[in-house]
Each structure stands twice: as C-alpha cells, then as structure tokens.
Amino acid sequence: MNLHRWAFLLVPCLWIVVSGCQKRQPADEHINVVMKKYTIDPPVIRVKAGERIELNVTTADVQHGLDIPALDIKQSIQPGRTTTIYFTAPQKGEYRMACGIICGPHHDDMVGKLVVE
Ligand code: CUA
Picture 1: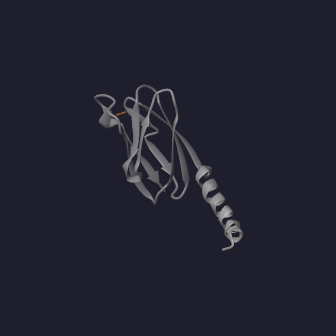
Picture 2: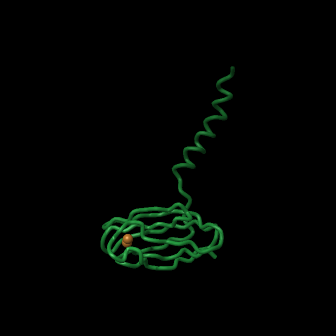
Picture 3: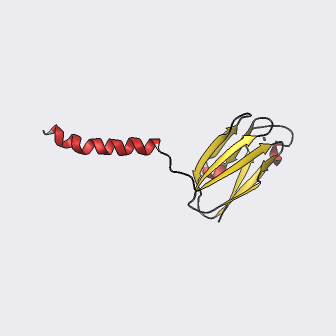
C-alpha cells in the first residue's frame, strides 16, 4: 500500500475539518441585549432569515437566563460578564424569548420576541 499517496489526500482534509471547527464565521448582525428585573431590552429583536446573528447579552442586576426555545437556545446570563449567543436566523416568523432562570416575583413577565423577516 502506498501510504504517501493517502497522506497526500488526508492531510488537507484534516486541515479543513480542524480549521472549520476553530473558525467561526463573522456575524452579519451584532445585537446588544440587556436583561434586568423585569425586562429584556430590546423586547423585540428584528433580523433577516439566514443572517448570522451574534447576541451580546448582559444583566444589569441579578442572574437571568435567555431562552429562545424554538432555536434550542438556553443560556444563563451572569452579572459582570457578557455572554455571546451565536445562531443563524431561521425562517420568517416570530419566536418567543423568555427569561429562563427564576429571578423574582415577576420572572414570568420577562419575555420578548425574535422577529425574523
Ligand atoms: Cu429574569 Cu427570570
């Protein structure tokens, strides 16, 4: 068996796989989101289908969570740091956002929506 011939093919393939995992495509939209008792600001996030979206999420007070159930996004948001959530906008529609961590008596009021146009 001629190993050299296989290595010739294998090395570039491995390189593509590895670099593909490490490199994240740049986002089309960077959106800052601030969570605090008891709002998600902005409450409506508008994006275009197929865009790569980066949400930079912070909390102005206690720990919250940002959930977008339809996109399988469930992320805790901790005080003192920015949490980046990265996704590709799905097909047109409205997707519910909500706080995912109990943060007080009006936790259930912390809702918003992602509008994909
Ligand atoms: Cu914020 Cu629950």
